[in-house]
Length: 196
Image 1 (spheres, rainbow, N blue to C red):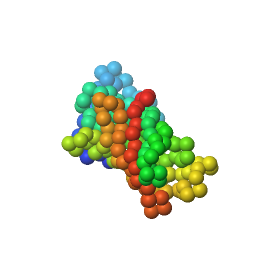
Image 2: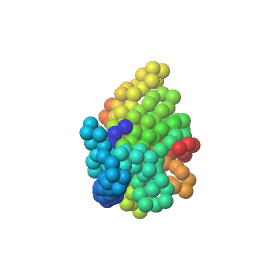
Image 3: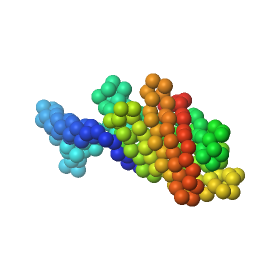
Image 4: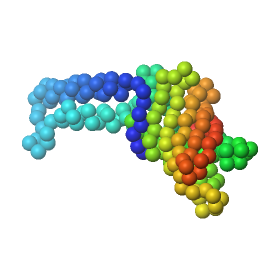
């Protein structure tokens, strides 16, 4: 997985909230020890603010953010899951629908996008989520594509870019892609989420 950018201030705001919560937890832990009139052995240090911050951040980054997205407090869309659909390519003048599976692994700060077809597979190298557009929320990513052993001879390793619009009502991703100078292809992609 790799980091991704998003055009919102929520990360800055959430990190501040996590820092304040960490200070409160560290102070609360100290007060509990004081109330119990107990102290930790000399070889164990009292948990610091950074200790609590690290634990809270990992929990929020891996799991908790999804709940806050669900109830609307976080704007980052949850794109996790397996998406089934097809690609139409300029390689054959958009004549056929090439079956494809898109797998998205996402945390609050990291993402990985894998696309698999019968001929090749690709993986994201960088990504961004754009949420402030009239059309809706976009996932934009740059990928590297590697052909499988049985692929056509003209297919080679290449890089490209994809931009997909997330439709919450249809639970779908739809958009376009283009590839680098080795392939010089472009086309459309359409996927519906089959599992989270």
